[in-house]
Every structure is written in C-alpha cells, then in structure tokens.
Image 1 (cartoon, one colour):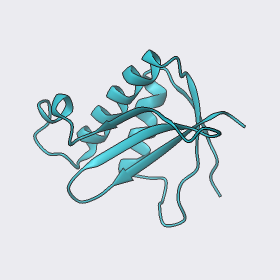
Image 2 (tube, rainbow, N blue to C red):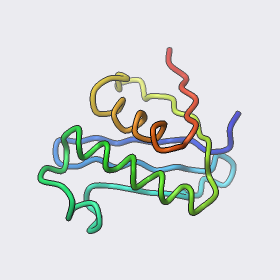
Image 3 (cartoon, rainbow, N blue to C red):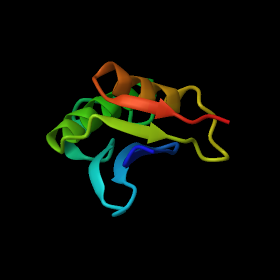
Length: 103
C-alpha cells in the first residue's frame, strides 16, 4: 500500500481535494476552490475547469512536500466519472502517480 491517499469532495458550491498520510492521518497537501489563490483564477467554483485547477494546485503543493505517488479509492456513493475523474486526471497529467482502486 502507498502511504498517501487522495480524498476528493465535490459539492454544488465548491471542490476540494487533499493528500493524507495513512499512518499519521496528517494532511500533507490541500487545495480547494474556496482558497484565495484558486478563487482568483475561476469564474465558477464547481465546474470541470475548477476541478482541473484544484488538481493542478494540489500537485504543486504535493511536490513541495515530496509526494509523488498516492492511491485513490472512491467512496461508496461516488462514481468515477465527471468532476472526480477530472481531478484525478489533472493529478496524473501534472506528474503524480495515482493508483486507482475501483470496485
């Protein structure tokens, strides 16, 4: 198992994602559309371009913390398509190795 996990939360108003260390439960990188640096770039805070921006900012912060690989397991109610897929694909495109565990 990889030591870092990806958590993605999407609501009707905002998108947030974080990388958490499994054993210490410490968040090493966090990005969301409510933060000032991302909010300034976006027209809307919960569409596909917002998801791509969250992924891009999360990669920058993860690389500062020397995290280059993580795992993602979607919650029971989440489907791996649309906005969630956009966040994960943005991580992969920007240099983070994401291992997916889909049912």
